[in-house]
Image 1 (tube, rainbow, N blue to C red):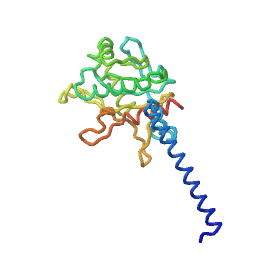
Image 2 (cartoon, rainbow, N blue to C red; image 1 turned 180 degrees about the vertical axis):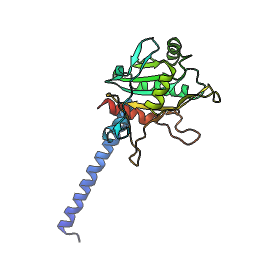
Image 3 (tube, rainbow, N blue to C red; image 1 turned 90 degrees about the vertical axis):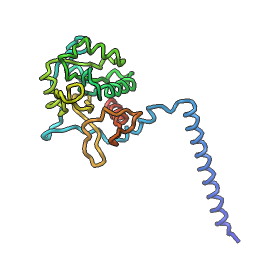
Image 4 (cartoon, one colour; image 1 turned 60 degrees about the vertical axis):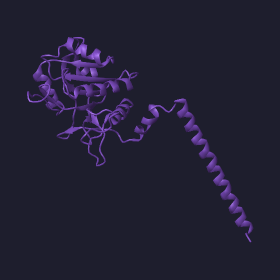
Length: 247
């Protein structure tokens, strides 16, 4: 026969179980209600970025790598320099308007970033052509209109080819060269560089603690993975942009 102490302990377990069940039902109800009302939004999905460790600085010879000085004309024939991006978080890519392969995907991914951060005046993009002989400001303007580029801090830039190639190779260590044996006549990387408000190149680290350095720009979020099994990195780029904007 149960003693008084055993009865008391039994009733305590019952009450604790009931309380846990009530709170669980309430939590499920609230989540379901928010989903139905459409109030579970992107900020909820990106909220976990606040718990991530700070983004890594990319270093060279023990020094943090900063975007070198540059000065090019944009699609509005306005002279734009690296100083115009100070105080802004921005993404850098190298492309050309007649590219028949990866550039359209890259540009559409950048448009996705533009749309995600459309209310952020301190977010921008620097797209630099590697075919400046053809990509004049007028051509770049037409390209911008075709893809719906509206962010005033998104500059599509052109200039002297040797300066552009030096910036790509020596400033970012990104491939950019003429290559008549590839479609479009130019070979270049499909990677995006992420730059913080002070002009430093930043990225998250992998599970071994090594910086990713660049973000894959040739796979869309919808696609998920490419034929080689490489995963899209636009989602994590959005998370990391959000983190830098909050710094």
